[in-house]
Image (cartoon, rainbow, N blue to C red; front, top):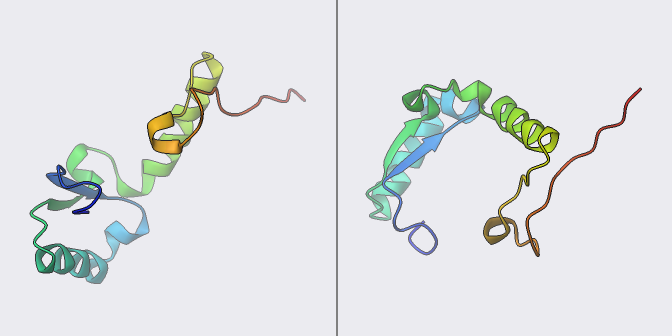
Amino acid sequence: MRDHASFVDDIYICGGGAKNPFLMKLIGQLLRKKNIPAMLRTSDALGVDPMHVEALAFAWLAHRFMIGKPGNLPSVTGARGLRTLGALYPA
């Protein structure tokens, strides 16, 4: 975190791990131990059930495909440029 995301103020956990009190406590302890002042929360704080984040991400990717817009960010993915992701195979 310090090396790649020192500017982060909040960390949102999603998926099954967000429902695991032991894991959430452990992550919080590690952040404090490493002097990372970011606030740890689940995606519930953003109004998104932690168990729905993956489905929402895939729905967003499908929407981007359907409107012909890129679904990647080259600075994050390392791709050589913007790309429309996915394919549609009619039955």
